[in-house]
Image (cartoon, rainbow, N blue to C red; front, side):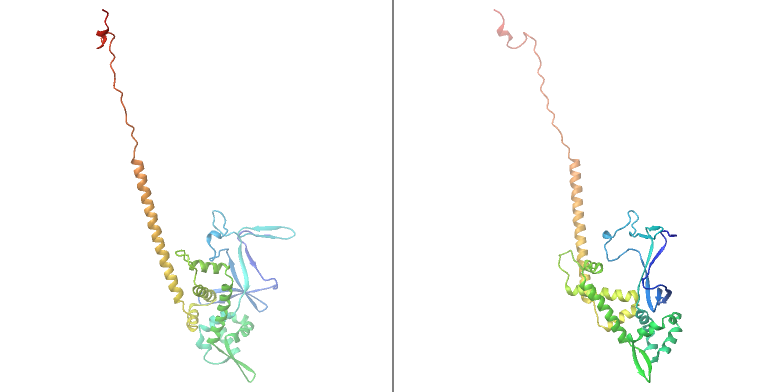
Length: 313
C-alpha cells in the first residue's frame, strides 16, 4: 500500500459504489458533501478531541499530547498501520437545513406569493449553481417548509416561516429528549458539571438542568447548520427565555469566586504562619552552660595548719 501517516482515510457507506463531491455554499463558508443515489453525506474530520470530555480522561500520546488514533489496513498480500491518519467520516446530511438557510435569508422573495417548482428552481439556480444536481432532493424537501396548493393539476409553493420554526422545533425537541433520557452521554455529563456547585453540595434543580439541556440542544442544532439570525428569531417566536438559568449561573459563578478568594486567603495565612515558624526555629539556638571546678592548691607535707599538733615530743 502506498500510504503514510499523512494519508486521508475516508469512511464511506457500504451500500454506495460511486459518489459525486459537491460544495454546499453558506453565508460565510461552504460544506463538502457527497452525493450518491439522491442521498447526501456530509464529511467531517475526526481528530479525536471531544470538548465534552475532561482532559484527564482523554487518551493522548505521551509528551506530544495528541489524541490516540491508529488504524490497521490489510489484504491478502500486505498490510499497513497508520499511527496518526487524517480520518474523515461521512454521515447522512439532511438538505432541509441548507434549504432553510438560503430561503430564510431571502424570505421576502419566497414567502410573498405562490410560485411553481420550476420558477423556484430558476431563482435558486441564478444564485447557486449546485442546485441543478439537487433538484430531486429539493422537490422532496419543499413540502416540509413550504405551503403547497394544487390548482388545475399544477403544484404551487410559498415559503412558510411557521413551518420552518415548527420543523426546527421538532429537531430541537428530539435532541432535548435524547439528552435528558441519557444522563451518561458526555455532553449531558458536561452540562451537569458546569451546573454543579461544590460550595454547598446541593443538587441541581430539575428546572435548571432542563433549561440548560434545552439551551445546548438549540445551540447544537443552529450553530451546526444555521446562522444566528434564525436562532434568535426561533427563540423569540417560541417565547423561550433563559433568565432563570442565567441567574442561577451568575449566582453560581459568584459563589465559586467567593470560595476561591476564601481558599486563597487561607492558603496565604498558612504560608505566612509556616514561614514565621520556620524563621523562629532557625533563630533559636541551644546554648550549653559551662561549669568550672574550683582549683584546690596542694600543700606540701609538714606545712599544713594541723601538722604542728602531730609533732614528735
